[in-house]
Image 1: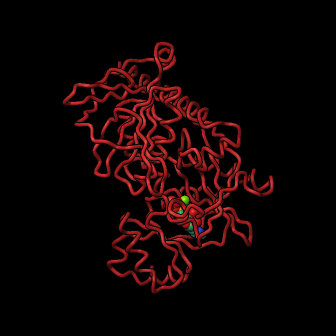
Image 2: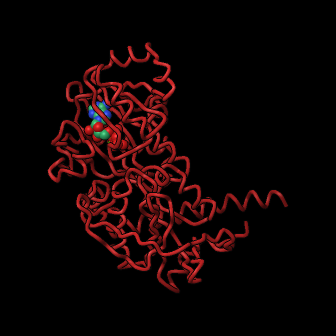
Length: 386
Ligand SMILES: Nc1ncnc2c1ncn2[C@@H]1O[C@H](COP(=O)(O)OP(=O)(O)O)[C@@H](O)[C@H]1O
Ligand SMILES: [Mg+2]
């Protein structure tokens, strides 16, 4: 690697020219369309201050740098960022800067990006894979790094880490692998039957994709098959009669928590349809109508979970609170939460005094700060070898 050092290089860059923010969106994910929706909101707002370059990834995984910010209307999601094929783009892995440089093979056009907002929800985006590529390139980016993204994406691992800490409860669950079912593990099926009603979920997915609520043993197989279509690992979790709360968290070493929000699904649960298809599918209460004591407990739990799951930059931490005994359960962490201007994460910050444009600025500064810390460590390692 031949990278120039440059502690505050982004500050110098801004003095010379507008900072270039690269928005990577779309992707090989069940949440491709949701990502394009989040990306449209960020691009339209950020372009008022930054030089924005949009990089769309198709469902097949092909990368296209867009000529401009073009928005189109999607039947369910409203405004989404368009994604046009613009020829073959190569990533410069031989850059001596801390930038993402993309080069068009045919036209010779080159774009240089100072900081990336990886706005790809779900697989190959929120799970550490894209973060790994950005680390290899050496460009600063918003949100958690490889480990935080990967752990946060895997519901099974995230729950086990939180359970191990003993600090926040988790709902009882069983992990099921594709093999367990093909070998018809009766003991496992009996265990699950004793937990009914249950939620069956792919371990790595989001937006309620592949999730089913099961109340009868007869429906279990179908639910497992559905979940296994998205991941080779599935979790089966006891259903809780609960209220659902969400806390937006940001920061690196010292995370900050927003006010608490509540999701009130108008369907049986917060399904894909309730989230995106039915416009009246869920109500968001910001702030949640709860006691100050419960709000504080949820904010503290959110910050603990954020740190123990190695999150940096931002994440939304979601909880269930049992309607009968008040137990707080950690449900999941979203390291790339929905980011449209009406999504819970930015809305919670807006309520807590951080406007949408200010939120983008703040997340960019966390990205640069983390990058600087990381660069210092690499230098220390190299100097030891001399
Ligand atoms: N154990 C559970 N008890 C009650 N409701 C649940 C449970 N697990 C999931 N749900 C419902 O399903 C929704 C989606 O589940 P979640 O684990 O958050 O997956 P996703 O990552 O797809 O959002 C939740 O918001 C909630 O409404
Ligand atoms: Mg969820």
